Image (cartoon, rainbow, N blue to C red):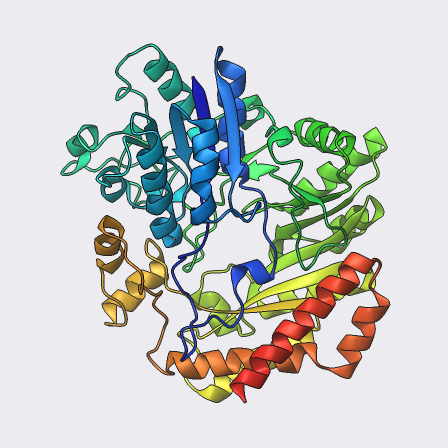
Amino acid sequence: MKILIINPPAENTVSENPNEDGEEFLEGDDFGDFPPLGALYVLSHCEKHTEGHEFFFLDCVGERISHKNLSNFITDISPDIVGITSFTISLIDICKAAETIRGIVPNAHICLGGHHPIAYPHEAAKLPQFDSIVVGEGEIAFTELVKAIANGENFTHITGVYTDESIEIFKDKPHRDKRFLARVSVPSAYVEEIDSIPFPNRKYIRHIKYQNVLGVTADLATILSSRGCPYQCTFCDVPIKSYRQRSEDAVLDEVEECMGMGYSEFRFYDDLFNINEQKIIDFCDAIERRGLNFIWDFRGRVNAVTFESLRRAKAVGLRMIAFGVETGSDEGLKGLKKGTTTTKVANAFKWCRELSILTVADYMIGLPTEKTRNDVVDNIKFLINLDPDYGQISILTLYPNTAIYDQAVAKGLAKKDRWQKWSMDPKPGFVVDHWEEHLPHSEIVKLQKWGYQKFYFRPKYIWRSLLKTNSIYELTAKANGAMKLIGTNRRAA
């Protein structure tokens, strides 16, 4: 059998922050793109634990494959089983890709996995474009599904695998699993021992040059050292709350495999890399034992680093940390349940500056605690005074299955079931809600543009940024980012 895993095109993603012309200020691809590791994990596990099949992997986003051109690839492959990864905001593209596949290979079994079936299992199972869905972590579930289909067997007994009929049993009897968000209402696929999962087989993506505006090369590898996040941030919809950490040896085995393929820059793309400072120290110890030399960075929390852990990390190649700062007031941090304070934020950035570790501050405006324009301005000024090497200023988006969305519904700022209804019949024109209790979204968008301009066009910042540029790729990426900011601020004038 021919088995295809696909990351569909991204041409109709739900709009987050459109301006008056319906255009985004800064879109996701302005910051780069990354390989869909979850989907690649599923393929690699299935490849290792089944026999007699031919496997294919297609990342339409990374390879810039449009819906118009997708049919050519499907015709060439003519797959028997197709797994499509998903996010709810990409549902139009997901369904459109499935319809294209169905039109070319009408007898193919099409399975929907990824984030969307976890968020909306009942709605996902009812989508007519799909024969089955996988809810949860797909490695084992999808492998067992392939085995059952190949043997002509029933597959609805597989944990996490559902059809529109088999999921009905849980409609009135929701299932609760504390390893997932409370809203995950059906038994879900879960991998307890994540070290048992094969490494993502990067031969399927090695020809793709994944890039990011914050990187130093035009060819980086992303790696997961853990799964899940136990924190309860009100704006976050990460569905798996149990934290499982891979062994340092397993992670570095994967790093060495990637280095053998020519990768030299690594981004640890965990939901939470530094669960605590000891995780960082243990990882550094393992790097030193092996004598490895590579550039790496991670996404982390300010309350789980110490000066010593950062010093150790810098000594073994750490280049940059992207901290989820979110906001510059203790009231705002408390409201978001970040579990930290502005003092801890300032300390983490101070330590990184002393150690010459680059920093990214992931930031938000448009929060419930910002009741006036001056509140937003003060928030942005905190970011400027924090003086990270990069600032990414987002506008708070109210995604379903989050505590802050529930708060918005309670205040009448969002409708409770609008995402569920849309996900049953996704159409263009759907946009994300924002917290507009105090300020209209149009005003927040203007403040976002103002904030970017104030942050990035400081003479001190520009000079320092040029001094820290170490490659032609990095210089080009920064120049392109500057042109994007200049263009958008001109349109705002």
